[in-house]
Length: 425
Image (cartoon, rainbow, N blue to C red; front, side, top):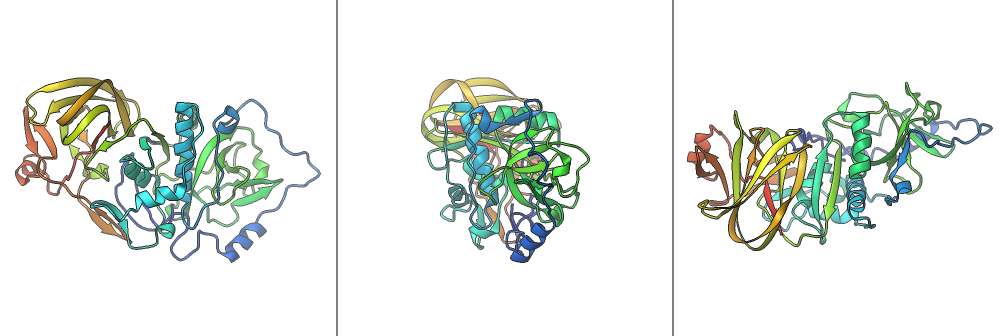
């Protein structure tokens, strides 16, 4: 994070852009020289006569020790959000593919704030200083970057120890925001860099890190501000390039500005057919029962997978591939989405396509769309939709969402712009 405050609904932004991340606009990364001195002065080492703590096998897990390399890097400017995302993406890829990969976090910044496109997220500020959040990474990189495509952006709906541990083992590092500017909460004990900050103040959350493991027995006496319990998350902190940052279990991740996120990517896809750059949960299409929407694409090739967002856990969806006139259904696949967030579903059969439509029925009654554009606090989201791109099915008939008459039918007072459905080749 840095310089913005963003709420990502369950997964998707409810665009309340204010000010938070690796630093606030008036402070350099939350660590001016005087702040750094104060923080250092506020932490004292545990007596060196005591033996150095050695973790046991019980209640301990760390990705690197499990054969999943974790790259420790020092951030440039206010780009902690991109560095945390890189660790999440890399470890997610490594778990799925069994091989190491390294991506440049600054390339993430470039892709998120790319000015050479018609729509997306834009800023007139310095991209290296304005900050960002995991939601921006998921939405931008799902359209492809540097030979990869982001294939997963699963959010964490609540702070649940068992779920976090399960997901780190399954999905890789968790990208989270933490309150990293409160004096007296940070320490350095026997070489362990530690943080314990219990707060409900969203203004204090200004830094992004990646959780790569845990130690249930890490001593609470190692924290400058003593937590109520032993135990800490092992995290990669881009403000230091050696050793983990031990964040106490009492320190809750940021759910107000930047929902915790598990990401991954793939290099098996060569093209992404898409119209959307943002998915806004609060502006999505909501119906009393299941809802079906579709995108029509004009791209010849072999369709291998479909990407979309789910706003409900344990949701059933039905994917259908039609001709571009919706006259013939060419393929059907039912899928159960366990998690909320952006997900790519591989098709059981690859399909040769040219002019075609991808339709998805959402059992939850919530269809993900871009919603209208916005402009706030140095950021601008611009959405462009055209006739013949996105449709909704009502009473077995298809209606173009670009037309005002369709919006009137669904009692929509603002634009939906495009449906958040992608075709991966």
